[in-house]
Amino acid sequence: TNKTFTMIKPDAVKDGHSGSIIKMIEAAGFRIVALKKTQLTSERAGEFYAVHKERPFYNDLCMYMSSGAIIPMILEKENAVADFRKLIGATNPDNAEEGTIRKLYAISMEKNAIHGSDSDENAAIEGNFFFSFTDQF
Ligand code: GTP
Ligand code: MG
Image (cartoon, rainbow, N blue to C red; front, side):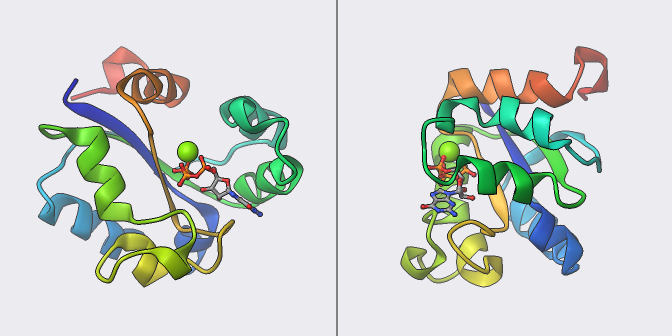
């Protein structure tokens, strides 16, 4: 499809980078379909990241993702999932290309500023995790 899901993670929200990140997202041609500011409980973070539950970093990730406010969004653009992953850069900011959101704003592999869905299927699942159809414009 032409949609993806993202969330600005707690470190980037706390450090005041939300506006700059949203500016980069719109400048790259993405249209914001839905947006809010919210906070996950560790249980709900665990549900969101259930695919990673066997990974050694799962508990830390759930603690971190519930440690502060996040800004989830549904975005629309042609080739949205792949183009957005390109805009955010590699998971580890040391490997992220110049000019990517993570190169500019990520603090570490875990506190890496932003999430981007990895498939059309997950984009739909993740968008529905945070938003109702009637929140989407
Ligand atoms: P997301 O867009 O957030 O899904 O990132 P990703 O697809 O680039 O990475 P992945 O789905 O593999 O991992 C999900 C998240 O777990 C990452 O964004 C990091 O915040 C965290 N993470 C991944 N690998 C590690 C790791 O080795 N150590 C720690 N502490 N966190 C990790
Ligand atoms: Mg991922």
